[in-house]
Amino acid sequence: MTGICSIIKEIEARKSYQLRRASNRYIKLILIMASQIISYKFRISKPSKTVQERLEQTLRLCKDLYNASLQERRDAYQINRIALNYHTQRAQLPDIKTTNHEYKEIYSQVLQDVLKRVEKSFDGFFRRIKAKQKAGFPRFQGANRYDSFTYPQSGFSLTDNRLTLSKIGKVKIKLSRNVVGKVKTCTIKREIDKWFVIFTVETETEPLPKTGESVGIDAGVCQFLTLSDGTTVENNRLYQSAQKSLRVAQRAVARKKKGSNNRKKAVLKLRKIHQKIKNCRADYQHKVSTWLIKNYDVICIEKLNLAGMVKSNLGKSLNDVAIGMFYNMLEYKAVSAGKELIKVPAHFTSQTCHACGHCEKANRKTQADFECVKCFHKNNADINAALNILRLGINRLDATHNIS
Image 1 (cartoon, rainbow, N blue to C red):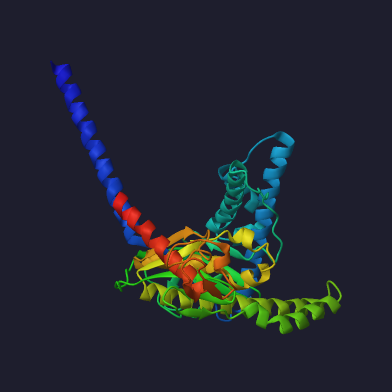
Image 2: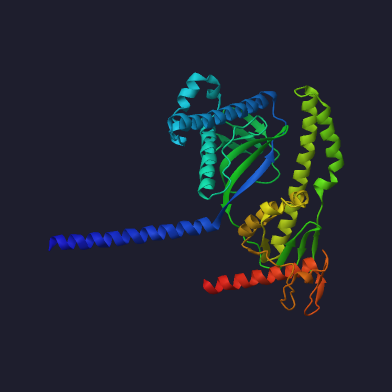
């Protein structure tokens, strides 16, 4: 009888434990939904000569460690058929510091993060092989490709606009806005001849007020965006407008002798032009995406095959527009603001009549004109496509709500 009672008590204890675990998982899920990971990027303003040298040295040594780690993994498998991982390589860090005293001048977790990057690159390589995609074996990093290092947990502190980095020193940053939330990581990045700090922060989501508005968006080359309400967003064509200055800078590089200081100066000038194009494009897209998130509760976009589209004769123009980058901005901003971003299939949205639903290639008279051959409905082709995207998105949203 005593044995049965003890068994019953054990069963009840297990049930209680399982309920507690389920409750904890539910609480964690709520906390994850209520929080978000965002990044703050600030310019480091004119570091001292000593700090500049330490930053350069840290970047150089991290690059060498990355390449050495990659080579060790490759050789271990090719020669001995041994697969190394992060933990086996991390255990070698004390010996590396003993052999090469320069690594003693780098914070320990920064070196560990370098090995985690190698691990991440191999994880991606094997994942692509498993998915039968183009694998792309991890490659060695040159001085111009390896441009950042990370303090993953500690080793840094921010007081007002002063950032203290372990083993490097203090730097002043241009704190354009307050860092709100718990700082998780600190990444130091070099962009051409400037240094930046990127804080990864965990903070609570802040839903924006509801507007009750929905919109469909047709992205293109002639107009950057065409909305279903008739609004158009201009395509700045930043890369195209910079062709003259790029052509002059590229010719200057081609005329210089390889390895000379004059060539390095010419390359630096060319890189700055490309960097300016990149910064202007990002600034423009941030402004447009923020405006859309503030004004619309439901945003419907096409799910595009961008990798295939850029291989067409419009590839350079599509890369200049950078639709993929813009859609990524919309996605994370919609999650943060509590808005709905719905992706719909892109098939036949430009050939289907919004008025009657008739789909035929002949409906699209020109690049800009749409006239249905069945009901003779006329409209701008991009607006008609945006209306179709909105209709598909609303239908998908209604279906999702009915299932839930």
